[in-house]
Image (cartoon, rainbow, N blue to C red; front, side, top):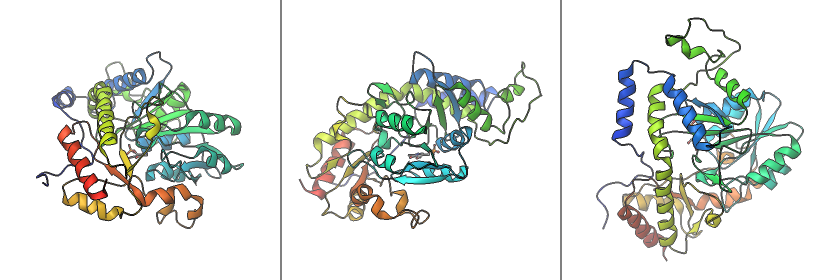
Length: 382
Ligand SMILES: Cc1ncc(COP(=O)(O)O)c(C=O)c1O
């Protein structure tokens, strides 16, 4: 039986607490960046590492954070940054905005994360940075990336858009490289609508990103709205407008308190999928059990080669199941075609026609999960 309502790919987990927190800000008279933003920054830093040593700056998006991190490090024209081809536009666009060139790298087929061995083969005298992307919430091989960065003196900017709460060898992503940037976009594990945060153990780097995020004005900028602030500010350099306001920060504070519970629910949904899906489906990052803490922002699967993925998407839509494809590799897009020959990406080329993301969000019911499993198995065969 086809269900009556449409089961979407993702749905934010918003309840009365978020509504109350936002209402409080709306009534407070302080809508822009202020104490709520600072509280969110402090709480997220504590979430990443309760022992301290992590500095954070909240931003209007992950994209902004990735861009400003490159600028803060002085990366620009003439430089190269290694970026996986399997990612969203943001990861490579920020490199182009900075004036540097993205150098696309193939992936590991089992995890969809960057192939670090191949990344090493792409290093030239101009390579200044590498941007690992923790696809779907499964961590990249941070030991290998750290070793590579050390060997070649690379700046490591982690795109952790999918990885709020993800752990690598028991430690949360955000504790490893030079700088890690999270996304709080509407569908993410911690959802604000739009929002992001950069985290680092380097306080100076974070303060430089903060300055760049608000017109190059020193960090006292927002105090001018408070009784103890003054009207005076100094523009120390050219900057941008990427600050996070109090409305989003208040929403984020409530979402942060729920993050561990919603990640656990995502993991339970993943387990049900793993147990229930036909053997004809290949699972991504299936070896994760006990190794790392996967937070399943997405649940991508690989369907059998004999099945047309796009026909399957249509059939699932007809049965009121929403799916998507994460991602169409960057090298296949018009903007990058020609610059990067397909032969350089055998794994991405093999995996792309077979990949499909299934519905994954904490408020999915057990009936929702069973409905997806039954219909996939029926269409794919068991
Ligand atoms: C891998 C990846 N990086 C970066 C981003 C950009 O995040 P934001 O929308 O917060 O700028 C996304 C967004 O979906 C993403 O999937």
